[in-house]
Length: 380
Image 1 (cartoon, helix red, strand yellow):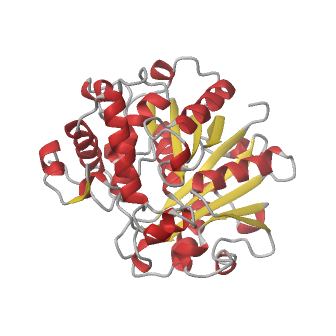
Image 2: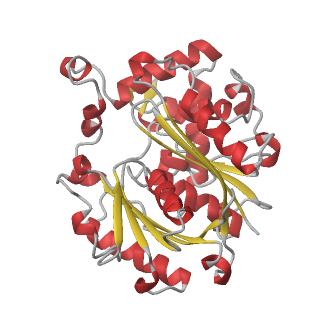
């Protein structure tokens, strides 16, 4: 990247089934915590980007009531109605423009106040798929899982193993909603069937929560303690789910290629120390191994079986537990960026992986991971 931009502070709420707090109070909590961590006052912010969604918030112009708690009052403020990782991209571009030096990004959602996957149906074709009532985020993911299994030979046991790995990792993450230190594939496979082969413990844990990240230009970041530099970013948007092959995450592969080119990554499996992947369903993590170049196409299952992606493996994936254990829609990708940054700074507590210098963070949005964004982050 020609110009330097760093992550200098961040904050997360605990992720809960019902936070028993308004979204405004949760945003205020993380905004204040991030500013304090950065040693900044609100007046020093140049721009604020929020990540939230009108459908999920149940109101139009849903960022309107977040202006004050996010610190955006009388600031240059804007909004992204997508995963929070795209809001980080928006803030990054504003800083790279030279018009802003310090940006705060805030993402939030409260699954306790909306009907689970129901809002996601609004992403479906309104004249055909939405009217028939057969497709939704989970049933579409089941079609995706079957397509991937047929193309690669991955088994339900391997998919369940990914979920068990992440549940076990989350037992070391005090912020996670769902965790299980003793989880194994058999326990995951014994959970309730939703749409074959998707079982309840193979889905992400929708929850309440908020995240905040503060970005600074190279000049503004010079005073920061342990800045995490954005080495590269890439994003890509795929076709609608009925117009593309569901057996591969082609837009993630394209996004990763763009990101690696910017970051100077030629061999991701050896140059990346840790990855935080936004997996809405367990099989998507296996697909991501291939799309991100961690292993050859069709070998995601074998790569998982090798133990490489375990927290003690050669390339740990989702040491935090990932979205399997805490999925705040509109902030899950931000959480991946924060968790990757924590690893680089050595602040991940019990889930800390030794020697992390370069980390990858991934965000997605859209049914069957239609849109993907990848960041490569590094320390000093």
